[in-house]
Image 1 (tube, rainbow, N blue to C red):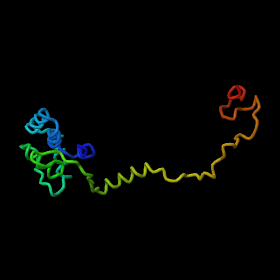
Image 2 (image 1 turned 120 degrees about the vertical axis):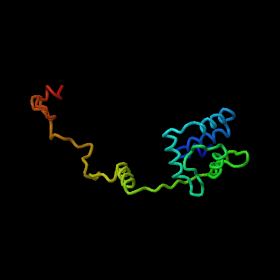
Image 3 (image 1 turned 180 degrees about the horizontal axis):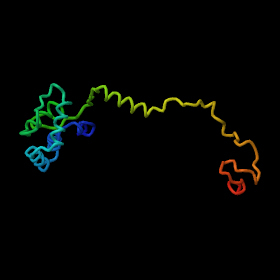
Image 4 (image 1 turned 90 degrees about the vertical axis):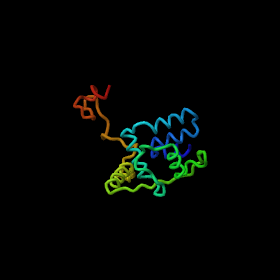
Length: 162
């Protein structure tokens, strides 16, 4: 199931995921697949099926919805995707799959905005223009009764001179 772990899980509908799990899960997994196929589809399941239809390769004939889907149809879809083979179906060693998604203009702008926020770019002030760590600020020694250089308005002896 390495292909499922590496990305297909986000695209496969629940029915096909259950069919893959039924291949190696024994009787409880096969029972769960039958229950999944017999159950009424909720909104999340319908949305996931629709998303799968959009990303499935064009060579795969995907039904419009998962209503009345049988185990055999599930395994036929998985075989068309190259995830199972044989009779009875067995999971096959997966090969890398490259997904290509197209972005509309708004999605591309959003992606550019995110990339720009991550890119630190060049520093606004060149390193040579920054003061050295050895530089002293404030001009000289501060007397006990002089105003504190921090700007508090107190005498140095009552502020930072303690």
